Each structure stands twice: as C-alpha cells, then as structure tokens.
Length: 460
Image 1 (cartoon, rainbow, N blue to C red):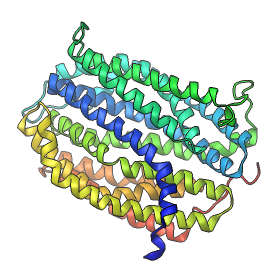
Image 2 (image 1 turned 90 degrees about the vertical axis):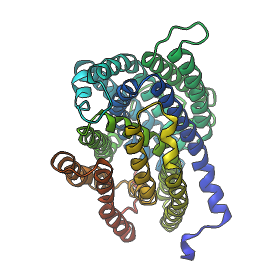
Image 3 (image 1 turned 60 degrees about the vertical axis):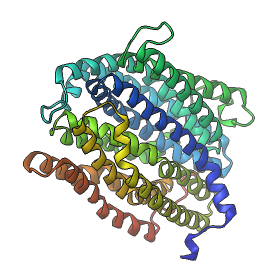
Image 4 (image 1 turned 45 degrees about the vertical axis):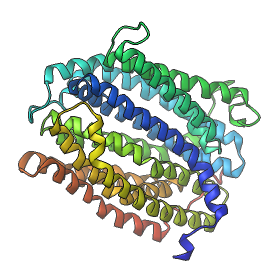
C-alpha cells in the first residue's frame, strides 16, 4: 500500500499538469450545465434537440481526438527525449489528418444529419414532440457545422502544447471561451440587449464564436512564444514529414483513431438504445450526462496527466519511474473519486430540479445520476489504465480494451434489455455500467503484466 502513495513533490508535479486541465474542463462543463438550463428553460423539446445533435458532434470530436492521439504519443516521447524536430513533425501530422476528418465530418452531417438525428426520436413516456424536436435539431446543426473547423485546429495546437508541458495556456484560452459562450448564450437565446430571441440557434452561434475565440488565442500565443514552443519554428515553412515517422504514427495511431471513432459511435448507439423508451429518456440522459461530466473532471484530467507523465518517462527510457508514477496516479484517482462519487450520490435529487422539465424526466435523471455516482471510482481507474497502456504505444491493445469491449459486450446488453424486456430504464443503465467490471479486471491484469512498457522513439 505504501508504494501506491506518493510524496508531496510527486503530487505537486501531478497537480501541476492535471490542475490546469481540470480547471479548463470544470469551467467548460459548468458552462455546459448553464447552457442546458438556459435551453431547457425555453422548452424540453429544444433541450432534447440540442442534446441529440451534441451526441452526434461528440462522435466527430472524438474522431479528431483519436486521429491526433497517435501523433500525441510520439510528441510526448519526443519531448521527453529533447527532440523538438520530432515534435514538429508530429504536429504537422495532426494538422493533416484533422483536415481530412473535418472535411469528411462536415460532408456526412450535411448529407445525412436529419437521418442520423431521427434514430434518437421515438414515442414513449409523457414528454416530447418528435416533429418539433427534429426542427430544433436541424436549426442547431446547421450553425454548429461552422465550429468544427476551429475545434479541429485548436485540438492540434492545445494537444501539442500539453504534450510539451504547457497546460496553463489552453486552460486560460478555455476560460475565456466559456465566458464568451455564457454571455452570448444569455444574449442570443433570450434576446437580451436588443438582440433577437434566437433560442437554439442563439446557443449554436454562441458556441461557434466561443470556439473561434479559443482557437485564436492558442494560435496567437503559440506563434508569439516560439522560444518556448520550438516545435512551431518553421512548422509551416515546409510540410515535410519523414516517411518512417508517418508509417509509425499510422501503425500506432490507426487503432487509436478507430478506437475513438468506434467508442464515440458506441456511446451514440447506447444512447439510441436507451432512447427507444421515449424522448423523456433522451432529456433525462442529457441532464445526467451534463451533471456527470461536471463531476468527472478530476479523473478526465488525471487521464491526460498519465499520458504526459508516463509518456515522457518512457521516452527518456526511465521505465521504473514510469511504473511507479502510473501506480501512484491510478491509486490517487480511485481514492479521490470514491469521495467525489459519494457527494454526487447524495446531491443527485437536487440537480434535476434546476431544469424546467417534467417530473417524469426529473425522476429518471435522478436515478441515472446516482448510477453515474456509484460507478465513478471504477471509471476513474479504467480511464487512467487506458491512458497508461496507450502511453507506451500499445494502441491495438487499447482498441480491444476500449471500443471493442463496448461493441461486443455493452451495446448488445443495452440493445436486448431496452427492446425486449420491461426492466426500467435506470436498471437497464445500471446493468450496462456494471458490465465494465469485467473490463476493470482485464485492465488490472494488463497493468500488472507491464505490457505497456515501451520506448517508441529510439530510432529518431
């Protein structure tokens, strides 16, 4: 047990990396909560319509994240090695792959957006108008497409900054962006300060502008601090990437891209399975996921810290330090989330009360939030385990561990229980979450076998 507890120096180092990410994610998710409340105050159909589109855009966002994650593994190890030229090549790869995915994503949403949204709209329960919800969904999607471009660019820059130990600037840019989003939401959704009442379209406009602001801040800072960000010097002078590195990134990165795409699609499929119980369930899931994200910021940030801390030690060939750091971080996030989950469980009934929605939706949302609370320590360990294994470049294993498990275990359970049983939706949700206990055992075994210990940048 003693080896799992670090000293003050270790936790200062961990918080130095994780805390800025935590703050950024916390503010972002808090504003998402306020967004939900603002849109929900207009009506439950509007809230459901926005929630459905955000579920689809979430798939795009994770495809971008997955696409740049492969290069990100190399960036962290190159930086640990002191190879700034290698970081630059990884950054160029991120830009190229993100551009391709953005073009594909926008095309898919334009051609098939309405059909995709319709998968989530089913009769059932006492709440919701399908035709109205579809109209709000399409209004929101049409504007949100503009924001996909700055989002993709910002992810390339901020990801590389974090991998080179600069986590404060992305945090500050995120804080500015969410403040802009919040103010514009208030003005544009409700028509304040002489602006027209735009409802869900106002929420979309506010989000797009906020993304542009965040992207601009990060780009400007990076290019005006070249001595700190050596990877950006000459990054656009030519766009050459060594063929051997491209091959290595594709070998390591393709499973990550497939994993994030399939995992996000899997989450969308899970939501779709739950949605067959009616629009009231869609609204309740929106509330529970928003509240869950707000309380999950700690283990999400720690997952990013694991990738950076362990990745840099692996790149420097310090395997024993990498093992020690991973063990301590995973134990710390488990203990912290036992307490955080307990707080969320107690407060669960109060969060749905701040939404302007029906008692049916509030009741379902309370049950779902409590399931999320109970599973937080387990999800925290799984999240850190995933990033530990990934930091050593074992991306095919993470593909099997993450998205393959969702598609072959969790989704079939949800599909059968939601359609062919009369079990309540909260119980269905709980059973699907408990299925991750099997994955937890698998993850712990992989950690103990140390299959993730690898330096993948020795040739550069």
